[in-house]
Image 1 (cartoon, rainbow, N blue to C red):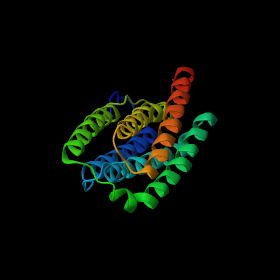
Image 2 (image 1 turned 30 degrees about the vertical axis):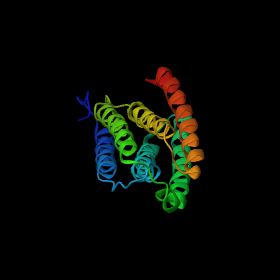
Image 3 (image 1 turned 90 degrees about the horizontal axis):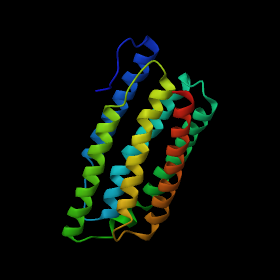
Amino acid sequence: MIQCQCGLNQETEKYLNKYCHILNDMIKGMEEARLKDSISYNFIVQMIPHHLAAIEMSENLLPYCPIPALGDIAEGIITEQTKSIADMLAIEDNCEMCKNAPCELNQFQGKINQIKRLMFCQMRQACADNDISCNFMREMIPHHMGAVRMSKTTLQYRICPGLVSILEDIITSQEKGIHQMRKLILQNC
Protein backbone atom coordinates (compact mmCIF):
# COMPACT_ATOMS: atom_id res chain seq x y z
CA MET A 1 0.00 0.00 0.00
CA ILE A 2 2.46 2.70 1.14
CA GLN A 3 5.64 2.87 -0.97
CA CYS A 4 9.31 3.05 0.21
CA GLN A 5 8.75 1.32 3.56
CA CYS A 6 12.23 -0.13 4.13
CA GLY A 7 13.93 0.67 7.44
CA LEU A 8 11.10 2.52 9.11
CA ASN A 9 11.39 3.22 12.83
CA GLN A 10 8.66 2.33 15.33
CA GLU A 11 7.34 5.89 15.53
CA THR A 12 6.92 6.06 11.76
CA GLU A 13 5.32 2.61 11.65
CA LYS A 14 2.82 3.71 14.31
CA TYR A 15 2.04 6.87 12.34
CA LEU A 16 1.65 4.97 9.06
CA ASN A 17 -0.53 2.24 10.59
CA LYS A 18 -2.91 4.94 11.81
CA TYR A 19 -2.78 6.65 8.41
CA CYS A 20 -3.68 3.39 6.64
CA HIS A 21 -6.62 2.91 9.00
CA ILE A 22 -7.82 6.49 8.35
CA LEU A 23 -7.43 6.05 4.58
CA ASN A 24 -9.33 2.76 4.56
CA ASP A 25 -12.16 4.29 6.60
CA MET A 26 -12.33 7.26 4.25
CA ILE A 27 -12.47 5.05 1.17
CA LYS A 28 -15.18 2.91 2.71
CA GLY A 29 -17.20 5.97 3.76
CA MET A 30 -16.96 7.61 0.35
CA GLU A 31 -17.63 4.44 -1.62
CA GLU A 32 -20.52 3.26 0.54
CA ALA A 33 -22.28 6.64 0.78
CA ARG A 34 -25.97 6.21 0.05
CA LEU A 35 -26.58 8.31 -3.06
CA LYS A 36 -29.90 9.86 -4.02
CA ASP A 37 -31.28 11.83 -6.97
CA SER A 38 -29.53 15.06 -5.92
CA ILE A 39 -26.01 16.06 -6.95
CA SER A 40 -25.89 18.47 -4.00
CA TYR A 41 -26.79 15.76 -1.51
CA ASN A 42 -24.46 13.23 -3.14
CA PHE A 43 -21.53 15.63 -2.93
CA ILE A 44 -22.19 16.20 0.78
CA VAL A 45 -22.43 12.52 1.75
CA GLN A 46 -19.20 11.74 -0.11
CA MET A 47 -17.30 14.82 1.13
CA ILE A 48 -18.07 14.37 4.83
CA PRO A 49 -15.99 11.15 5.14
CA HIS A 50 -13.30 12.89 3.08
CA HIS A 51 -13.20 15.82 5.52
CA LEU A 52 -13.29 13.50 8.55
CA ALA A 53 -10.21 11.75 7.18
CA ALA A 54 -8.36 15.07 6.79
CA ILE A 55 -9.15 15.94 10.40
CA GLU A 56 -7.91 12.54 11.62
CA MET A 57 -4.82 12.69 9.41
CA SER A 58 -3.98 16.11 10.86
CA GLU A 59 -4.51 14.90 14.42
CA ASN A 60 -2.28 11.92 13.61
CA LEU A 61 0.51 14.26 12.46
CA LEU A 62 0.52 16.77 15.31
CA PRO A 63 2.35 14.65 17.97
CA TYR A 64 5.23 14.10 15.52
CA CYS A 65 5.46 17.48 13.76
CA PRO A 66 8.65 19.52 14.35
CA ILE A 67 7.82 22.07 11.61
CA PRO A 68 5.75 24.95 13.10
CA ALA A 69 4.35 26.03 9.73
CA LEU A 70 3.11 22.49 9.03
CA GLY A 71 1.59 22.27 12.50
CA ASP A 72 -0.28 25.48 11.70
CA ILE A 73 -1.52 23.96 8.43
CA ALA A 74 -2.71 20.83 10.26
CA GLU A 75 -4.50 22.91 12.91
CA GLY A 76 -6.10 24.94 10.12
CA ILE A 77 -7.30 21.76 8.41
CA ILE A 78 -8.92 20.60 11.65
CA THR A 79 -10.66 23.95 12.18
CA GLU A 80 -11.73 24.56 8.57
CA GLN A 81 -12.95 21.07 7.83
CA THR A 82 -14.82 20.74 11.13
CA LYS A 83 -16.68 23.94 10.19
CA SER A 84 -17.24 22.71 6.64
CA ILE A 85 -18.79 19.47 7.92
CA ALA A 86 -21.12 21.44 10.21
CA ASP A 87 -22.06 23.73 7.31
CA MET A 88 -22.81 20.77 5.03
CA LEU A 89 -24.88 19.00 7.68
CA ALA A 90 -26.86 22.20 8.24
CA ILE A 91 -27.97 22.32 4.58
CA GLU A 92 -28.07 18.60 3.81
CA ASP A 93 -31.87 18.25 4.05
CA ASN A 94 -32.51 21.35 1.91
CA CYS A 95 -29.92 20.23 -0.63
CA GLU A 96 -31.56 16.84 -0.92
CA MET A 97 -34.64 18.65 -2.27
CA CYS A 98 -32.62 19.97 -5.25
CA LYS A 99 -33.19 17.08 -7.66
CA ASN A 100 -31.23 16.31 -10.82
CA ALA A 101 -32.10 14.29 -13.91
CA PRO A 102 -30.73 10.72 -14.14
CA CYS A 103 -28.41 11.59 -17.04
CA GLU A 104 -26.92 14.48 -15.01
CA LEU A 105 -26.54 12.27 -11.94
CA ASN A 106 -24.77 9.55 -13.94
CA GLN A 107 -22.44 12.02 -15.62
CA PHE A 108 -21.62 13.73 -12.32
CA GLN A 109 -21.00 10.48 -10.45
CA GLY A 110 -18.83 9.14 -13.26
CA LYS A 111 -16.60 12.21 -12.98
CA ILE A 112 -16.53 11.99 -9.17
CA ASN A 113 -15.64 8.29 -9.32
CA GLN A 114 -12.68 9.07 -11.60
CA ILE A 115 -11.47 11.74 -9.18
CA LYS A 116 -11.87 9.39 -6.21
CA ARG A 117 -9.99 6.54 -7.92
CA LEU A 118 -7.04 8.82 -8.72
CA MET A 119 -7.01 10.27 -5.21
CA PHE A 120 -7.23 6.85 -3.54
CA CYS A 121 -4.40 5.54 -5.74
CA GLN A 122 -2.13 8.52 -5.06
CA MET A 123 -2.80 8.39 -1.32
CA ARG A 124 -2.13 4.63 -1.21
CA GLN A 125 1.11 5.04 -3.14
CA ALA A 126 2.47 8.01 -1.20
CA CYS A 127 6.15 7.40 -0.55
CA ALA A 128 6.96 6.89 3.13
CA ASP A 129 10.24 7.33 4.96
CA ASN A 130 11.17 8.19 8.55
CA ASP A 131 10.27 11.87 8.09
CA ILE A 132 6.65 11.87 9.28
CA SER A 133 6.10 15.52 8.34
CA CYS A 134 7.10 14.81 4.74
CA ASN A 135 4.96 11.67 4.71
CA PHE A 136 1.95 13.72 5.83
CA MET A 137 2.43 16.29 3.06
CA ARG A 138 2.84 13.57 0.41
CA GLU A 139 -0.44 12.08 1.67
CA MET A 140 -2.39 15.30 2.18
CA ILE A 141 -1.59 16.99 -1.13
CA PRO A 142 -3.46 14.38 -3.23
CA HIS A 143 -6.21 14.39 -0.60
CA HIS A 144 -6.65 18.16 -1.00
CA MET A 145 -6.38 17.90 -4.79
CA GLY A 146 -9.24 15.39 -4.76
CA ALA A 147 -11.45 17.77 -2.76
CA VAL A 148 -10.65 20.66 -5.11
CA ARG A 149 -11.47 18.56 -8.18
CA MET A 150 -14.68 17.22 -6.64
CA SER A 151 -15.76 20.76 -5.69
CA LYS A 152 -14.98 22.24 -9.11
CA THR A 153 -16.82 19.38 -10.80
CA THR A 154 -19.87 19.90 -8.58
CA LEU A 155 -19.98 23.61 -9.45
CA GLN A 156 -20.53 22.63 -13.10
CA TYR A 157 -24.02 21.31 -12.28
CA ARG A 158 -27.31 22.63 -10.97
CA ILE A 159 -26.91 22.50 -7.20
CA CYS A 160 -28.63 23.98 -4.19
CA PRO A 161 -27.59 27.61 -3.63
CA GLY A 162 -26.41 26.99 -0.07
CA LEU A 163 -23.72 24.60 -1.29
CA VAL A 164 -22.00 27.08 -3.62
CA SER A 165 -20.17 29.06 -0.91
CA ILE A 166 -19.09 25.82 0.82
CA LEU A 167 -17.59 24.55 -2.44
CA GLU A 168 -15.83 27.88 -3.03
CA ASP A 169 -14.40 27.78 0.50
CA ILE A 170 -13.13 24.21 -0.03
CA ILE A 171 -11.43 25.22 -3.28
CA THR A 172 -9.84 28.35 -1.80
CA SER A 173 -8.61 26.81 1.45
CA GLN A 174 -7.36 23.57 -0.05
CA GLU A 175 -5.60 25.19 -3.01
CA LYS A 176 -3.85 27.43 -0.46
CA GLY A 177 -2.90 24.35 1.60
CA ILE A 178 -1.53 22.55 -1.46
CA HIS A 179 0.63 25.57 -2.30
CA GLN A 180 1.90 25.88 1.29
CA MET A 181 2.72 22.16 1.56
CA ARG A 182 4.48 22.05 -1.81
CA LYS A 183 6.66 24.93 -0.64
CA LEU A 184 7.41 23.14 2.67
CA ILE A 185 8.27 19.91 0.83
CA LEU A 186 10.87 21.77 -1.21
CA GLN A 187 12.34 23.25 1.98
CA ASN A 188 12.22 20.16 4.21
CA CYS A 189 12.00 16.89 2.28
